[in-house]
Image (tube, rainbow, N blue to C red; front, top):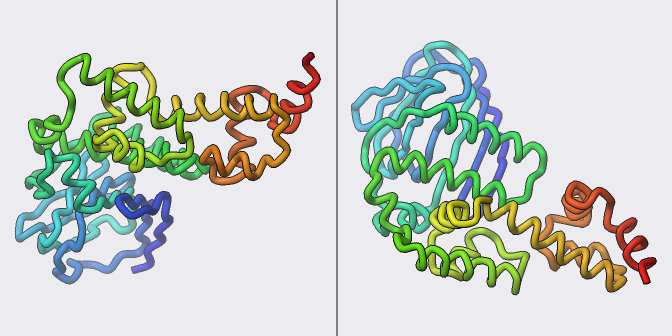
Amino acid sequence: MPVERSCLLSGDDLYVADVHCQDPPHGWTELRPAPVFGLVMVRRGLVRGRADGVEQLLDPASVYVERPGCEQQFAHPCGGDAYTEIVLSEPQLASLLGGDPVVPQGLVFTTPELALEQRLLTARARAHADAFELAERALGLVGRVLAGLAPERAASGLPVRTAARRRLVDGARAALAAEPGLGLAELGRAVGCSPHHLSRVFRATTGEGLARYRNRLRVTRVLERLTEGEAELGLLAHEMGFADQAHMTHVVRRAAGLPPGRLRALLRAVP
């Protein structure tokens, strides 16, 4: 069965891929244990799955949850299909489920909002968004799916008091101010909270996502360095946590209207 797999994000704790299955064979695949935790979110087509002998129908309005060790097999009754695959490490999974990585059984049905977030994730990856934003989007998707399976466990790591949430947000802002190149997982470790919970609390408290706030902070830092006459734009991009100089140029141009080189000349011309 020809399978086209495009990696959108790959890290120690999180893997996201866009998968297209073309001309699948008739009948069921070989019975195999799931090696990892993962979500399969069908975008197009229809898949039948068996998990420990229980058959499930997977369509674009549902999410299949792979549980490590579960014996599973699949069939493709309507021919080819396409889906988004999200895989989490056991520690990352445990952080989303109150410290316990055991995933409850069940099928989760999508909402229009969840379906949109799934497609925004793949669209932003194709637009070469940075890993921080993609990780935040992917973990948000996983968190919402797990909340449908085990709402109490999924919410157990969230601070409940307003003061506690504000301290968490201030801690994240301070960590980014000190080191704007931090990744999402590193930022979570710095403040002692799972990246998904941190992202939810940050958005609820400030009204915007971590990735957007981090970009605003990085752009202001870049502007300050350009005002000081920074000449090594590649080094500046690395220090600010951009993928490369082209990525920094794209973000700065979108935010400030001009590329860094033009901005440097303009800012240095101001008395």
